[in-house]
Length: 309
Image 1 (cartoon, helix red, strand yellow):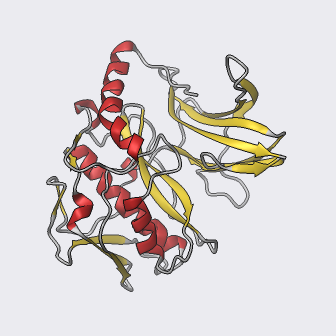
Image 2 (image 1 turned 45 degrees about the horizontal axis):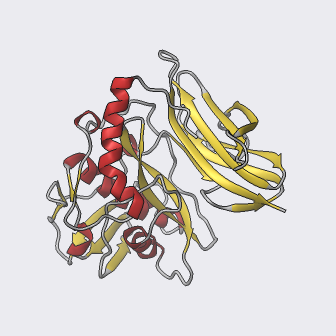
């Protein structure tokens, strides 16, 4: 469900973006020979909502690896993260990037313009320069500048997340990513972004709010269900809602709702985490911020999940 309310004029712009990116979202991976672009109003890097304050990923000893995707929110395209399980993963950076290039996101709202690469190479220097080597085939989609910038940022975020998640970065040094194409630097990615320098995370491109748990489509046991994510501070506050999805009912029923509180013991200042007792059923967890000046909802993120017996 969506909490966004837009004027008719704004909605036309957003629908333009959705229509253009619809094919990408449906297939998950960009199709060769097609042109994908953002509407003129959305190509600016000036965020209409608070900028994300997401921290670098912390060390994780599980088999789940971080992968970033793109999604349309509030008339622009932002980065969102999922954790995926890769059996037999040996190289966390190359494995995360390889998954990003060739798989679909779990959340159908997310998309990627990358094409599969015949090879994926990755290495890390002592000064936290992550070198990624892809084949030219990975850049087969035709993108405008705005979407090309975000697609490169998707790679940068995934590479740095995987390295940080695996605990292989030198503490205290900002990681950067050097992108090679068939072993050579300076390639013009998607005909829009010269790969002639190292790239760092651009916080303007990360979503202002996203849900980490539960992930879309996941099943969890009944009882205490954990809700976890990150959120920037919105001028009108941040809020959450759990609804029950019953196919027999005309509309979803609100189970619980409240203010979203970030920070606290063992949490980063932008991180939220709480539990709620749920019985077996189908649910949607929604979070959003509010713009105090307009009263409109912004940054809305929803996750459908199942609670089993």
